[in-house]
Image (cartoon, rainbow, N blue to C red):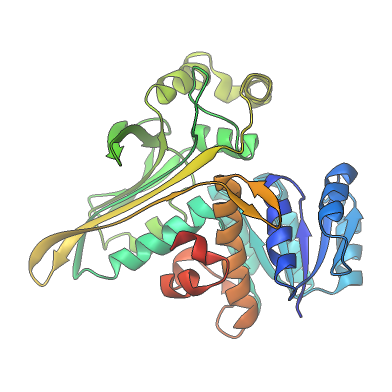
Length: 362
């Protein structure tokens, strides 16, 4: 029974804890600065496999002492992206496997630096996008002799939109703003290139419903590095209901709130409701040559809220936690296979879909 330290008991962290504890095969030590968040998780899991600690992860001494006392096999960060590098440094110092949910490109580069020469796995960008979308797209790409165009599209949307943005806050507001405001990566004419966020506008129809898609940062993961020079065009875009991008562009660019993100965060959290009634859309398309002919293959999936351990969880919680928990399961069962910096596309799709957590994506 492996021992795992999990940092963060928020929207995603609480379901990661639930997933791992419900197996009966993990001892979990959960930490958060918010004692009330920890208490809520404790109420749902009173059994002895869960232990909680209250401290601020930015207190490096407290973090180091906690890891030294618990002596886990792995540490999982479900904290905001900017908290992750110190956690990764501590994981390296204590020779632990490391996992996070970051969508931030700079943080991922820092994790890569920290992991150099490590004999444990360092796996950033777990979850949905980045995360599972890279795994399924990579699998599709291996079906082709020559690659031409790769499209990755993911969205988490309210089933019943009721505001002008046609959106609800279903995960980290900091992460959302980061995706909308930071530079993006893609491949054009075979070369890795920077792309502007909120640009590259297009529409796409899925199951008879019209959505818009536009560039956002981080969702491509490390695929641009892996496939530069091997594919003509590759990009990642976020899916939203039509009209969302124009209004976000007005807030972030015209009103210059991308330069004042604390104010933008307050506006969004004060005005945009949360919901558990959401749907996650996952779309991957690969066009290329198979046996001398031009072919296209797709993966399309809709995921809705699910009841787990007697509680309803939103679709974005379900998919993000499943993406992370499945790779944690694989690494801890096969630690000899995964060492150093591990990209999401390193995980075989068949292993993810066969995993008890990854079955969400079947």
